[in-house]
Length: 81
Image (cartoon, helix red, strand yellow):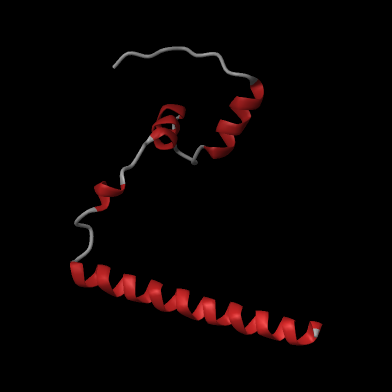
């Protein structure tokens, strides 16, 4: 594989350096930062039952969050009146 030289500002270089992992080359960093994943790439990493369990947990968490927000809102409204 060939290589290319590119010019970047000192600020851009410093920003990239801060993102670079300990033993990572700048080429590897650029690959990591520009890797565009598609949600469909995740298909098959868990079973249908695991997916349904996660979905159920998310629904329950959202319900509990909504109930908490409603309780806080009611309490604030009582205190304002």
